[in-house]
Image 1: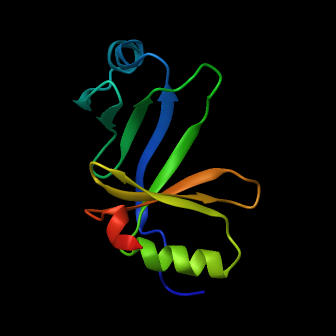
Image 2 (image 1 turned 90 degrees about the vertical axis):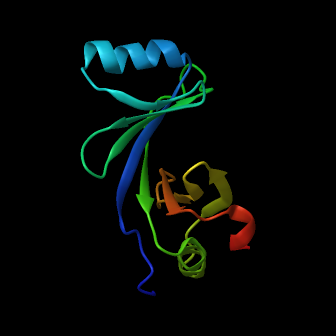
Length: 123
C-alpha cells in the first residue's frame, strides 16, 4: 500500500432533523459555540484542529456520527484503497473541499477530505 493516507482527524459529524433545535442543544445545554451556521451545516469548534458538524436534512433514526479525516491527495488515496479492495464512494463537493466516503470491513462509514479540491478535478 502507498504512503497516501489519512493525515489528521478533521470533523466528527451527525445528521440532524431540526437544525435550530440541534444548535440550541449543543450551544445552550452543552456550552459549545457554533461558528458557521446554515440550515444544512453548522460547525462547532472543538479545539485547534477539530470540529463537530451538524448536517441538516437527516431523518429520525439516522443516528450515529461520521468521522472525517483530512488527506493531501484524495485521488491517490482513492486509487490506493480501491486497489486494496476497500469500498469507497463517489467524490462529493463541500464548501471546504472534496470528500469521499470510505467503508471499513464492517461497513462503517468514514470520510476523507481534501481541502480546496473540487470533485470534477479529481476524475
